[in-house]
Length: 356
Image (cartoon, rainbow, N blue to C red; front, side):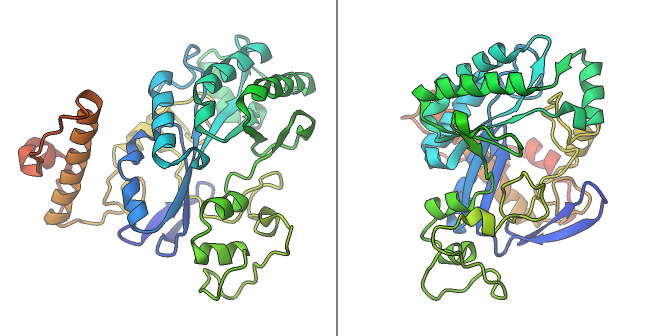
């Protein structure tokens, strides 16, 4: 964000693109572990950048399907903390994907959803689901077979059973339940289609941003727009998501136009149903090259920082880490002495072997 741009590699043709962040108005975070970014959200606030989260909290712990994740209890704790920090309207719960195996039938899957939902439904307004399409991903089938996971396809009967169960659970929760990227019409169960990058939600959450509102087609005073050559005005009553749909996505995707800056082969959560990693070893190798000073998630192009910049980054990291630990152990007894990078010379030297 400080540099004003980043480099992104297309996972299909391997071509690189430079993406400007200078005019970014909204960031939508997809994550299974929001804890690391939570201490840096104030930087987005200071830059006037709007944001919200879609946080996946599944319950596949007993089956070991997400071995690289923190424990379920820790993930639920992070979800609740994030909701309390930024508001439940900005934290969307995903139980995604829904997965059937020889050990997880529809009833068991509903039990798992209920187990998580009973603890977090008060801290969100939405639940988004999708049905795993394992048949569409050959490498996922290979990975599951390698780990002796006997998966099963969804059919009309199992989808109806799960939808009815969710409808019953939601009588207590009162959430907006939606599907992501699904062709099925489940409206009879109160389940609608999702817009994960949602213009209507942005309109509700960030009405004080005139540039964003003008881009969305919401009537505002005469303010500059992100794309002055385009007319995005929306007739009264028309769904903003229809007008602004991202034409580069699948027809069943309801997201509005945006730029994905995630990178394949960089996640170390090791989820066995994941299609975004060729292998866990490649992802683990790639992430070792990660640097906060790189143009991209993995360090294929390096921006050499100054010593002062590195020192400032480390002081911030150490201070936030110390404060977080003190908040957990002694919330009312914080030390008045703030550490600097000089207090951690070995740590500083290890991570900062960069050109001067």
